Length: 421
Image 1: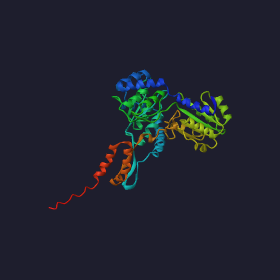
Image 2: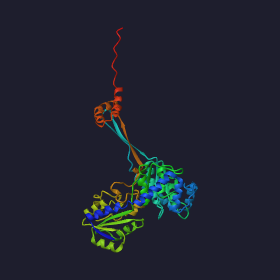
Image 3: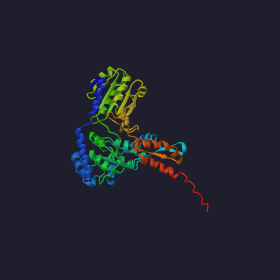
Image 4: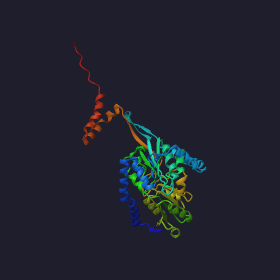
């Protein structure tokens, strides 16, 4: 492992490393694919599925059928369904407590201001299936969407190279969670199809889910045509550890991250002894040697890791100083793996330093807000002078007239003189 003493140069290196995630070659290739999907629709999906997934997929097989789902249930392990039931209880229970509620705030003269929350109508979920089918990503994305109230959910996931089918466990989980609109499409072309729409796949309002560098860049480029959950980089874990940390736990958690393609492991250590042990055990990763736990928190906030584990004598105290992390795992018996599969909060987390400004996927991810404003004639009259001054300042006189027209209508007309005759 590479060992770095924390200083300004180390800080600059971390920032340079994050900046290097942007690749101009990937940017250009993604732009070209998205443009073709937008122009050619299903024909482009078939072409790129053949090119990248080595599957010659007839157009009529892009969409998964009920027969495909029925066959999937014949192939899954018997114990899988009851296991899923327990996991979904954990995930659903967590997100049911998180939802924002619409509200109204009364003011003077009958004014009523508020915020009205509503779910996105149609959401697209991307499920990777490169090195392995990410079955857990199905329930970690679908359940928060369902809790939020999303009515239409579609899933895009790459077909298997050997059969052209989708992993049966992915199909089974999706079906058990009430998602039956599933497509055998992966990569950039899937993101393009969900963003722009094709004859087979209807356009969505929002795209969520993890993916490789190409999928991530595609999400970045379609943002604005649709909403997205976040822009992420390679998976990562950072571990803050002092002299009380169990070296075996630290070793296992750093090694686990290497199972992800391009996964990155950081050890932020106050213990020189622990540092030496890790150097002898692990080849890949970065050790950042710090002088104190306060400095360790400074480093962790700079990295803003997807997963942050705290293995110190008083982990709750350290937690209070963490401002930037996707998920914080507090104490030696809270490994990142429990968040990946079982605990409840979604494992779709901001990576590549984006935890400084992105939040984890949640039920709120699928909620949008509308502001509500209700005025009475009296309230509008009370605001008249202020609005007039501002419209004049900006030179928007038709805005002023829009206000004055209503007030003129509410002004009593003068009484006509009575005819003496």
